[in-house]
Length: 111
Image (cartoon, rainbow, N blue to C red):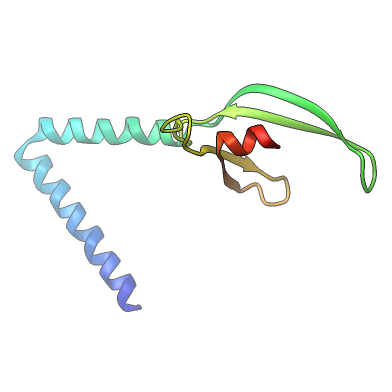
């Protein structure tokens, strides 16, 4: 094992030991902690919620129809203000991995 793997394993063991100690010494706090972690995990892993679908055409190199699905997702934070960048995320069919994009409101208006 590499030293970084050993360090990670040590940290995981320490975490489990802390949780075991909490479960034994204060079962109610342990229960609250686990419930909070499950709640946050469920929210984090929730699928994006569909909001709107746009249809347009790509003209070059070959004309095709393009559908753009706009969704709301709890993983993407709300913009801090009207001048901060707007966080976006996208999936591509080729990778099915999310890609996060950032657009400022000024950039969006000029394009």
